[in-house]
Image 1 (cartoon, rainbow over the protein chains, first blue to last red):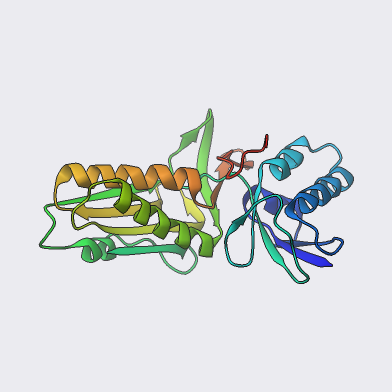
Image 2: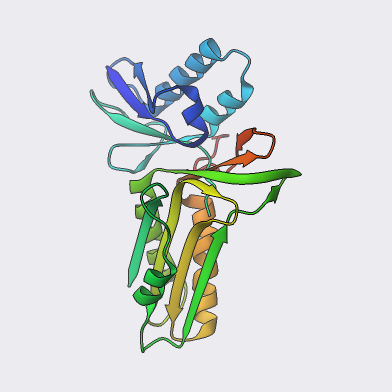
Length: 89
Length: 150
């Protein structure tokens, strides 16, 4: 299944677009999303440890704007947002 | 009474007048305005501006949740809260956030204002990219919403 991940904050630097699309097996969870993104960074930006750290420290939110945990299972056409460490004000 | 909004800098600006009008109440003897602005120096670098990014829907939800938490945890009589946060590029001296609060007494207003800004810093999906006078820019490190070690 294809999952669209909207990019925010530091994670916007991962792509020229506002989002990434990844392909995962059915019933994958956030854990697999994170692993997939780590592989993506290692392949596309092999020397960028900062990007890897961003993926490791980021939360993910679902289409209902709720932070979802590592075991949260995705369905076809799920939309996620990557939420890197925050710091407004 | 609560109002919370993200303001895209290309479409409008933060409004102290609107904030003042919103929190005005004959029941409240204290009003406080916390205003965040872009300062010229950080981490030994000359800052020329900041680009704010936000997940707008989550930010506005977070503002409301923080207001509700504050109302439960603190003893505030007749609380009124108005929050606006900027999104997009804000130049030096520009306003990044307004937190206007009103309460019956001044100690309540101080507690409420402080609670809200500290919680926003820790919880609300907003990010800052600083721009410097050497034409470099950098996303600032923030607080993770998860425990990366778990």
